[in-house]
Image 1 (spheres, rainbow, N blue to C red):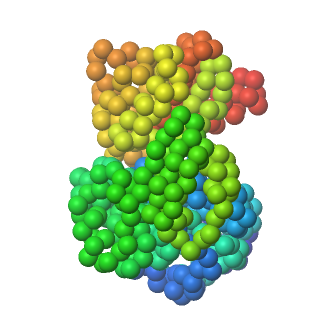
Image 2: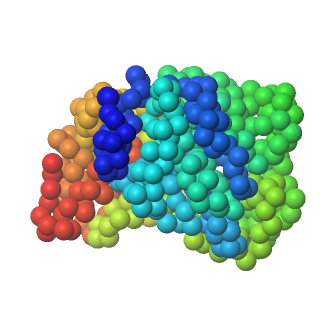
Image 3: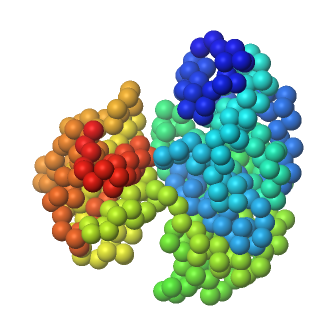
Length: 429
């Protein structure tokens, strides 16, 4: 796609995003050489702040959110970078818990475009560099960066973190990271740095992760070994690597990820009051993570798309809703462990409403249904919206509807409900 600077000067954000999708020959291209070259050219790596980098199969987003909210409660300015977005690109960069205007993202893209020269970048590499450019403009006290895929070769890994974290290790993104926890653990451990603090929030860390941390002399702190937490109904105690904090409020997001964030805080240069920690834990919520978006019937959406996430979902549904009837609206990508993911939720789902996702990675509803046992009640639908409204129509106000399987699934459900609320009519396309 050949365009001139004068043409690009007139583009809105949507035009820039289309451009980002077209300028590299493949959507995922692991490696740091190209992205680091551009970052050095634009002097983007001299970050002005305390920096956290968060890797992991599941739990990255909630760990970022805990750090973000606690630091904000402590009066620090914070930039958080996460991906992918659910509804708007601007969700990816938050400054003091607010999305930035499109104009700032456009300025960031213009700066990266001017600085990259002939260097080809993927969508994620380009957006990561743009986020770092925004950090340079905003000069926050704290930066929290979420790894996109893996760790060792992910674009975010051009940043040397003050504290690097790995939340959990599960089998996902097999084509890029390997088909076993040992190899995947090694890839995620790539965010660790020699002689710098690192945190592993997986209760059973792969040996390759531990060995890599030891080889580079990273100061690794592991859950269950170097820090732990004890829950007491609505409160918990955190026994950390440097201090014990008691009578903390149990958050809405996963407690193990809160503990990982707290361990990272203790290992960082930041000094945070206990009152700010408690406030941040209470404030931490996250779109697309067990998010209630409608009542009567209750519609919950979650971006979980692998067995580890599904197991957590099943446990939370049992804990929060007991014996209530739960129905699932599910659409997944074809490179995910569909059978393993659905199997974790089989004991708690009374009926499955299955839908397709489009694109080369999409799965048809019928192909998804093939991963369910014949005894599991299910129906196939033409779209996520159609599946959602079929579930709503066949539920009473006390039922629970869980929409999950992909960021795309959550986005489609939110879009369908938003269109319905605006028009008063159900939109199924």
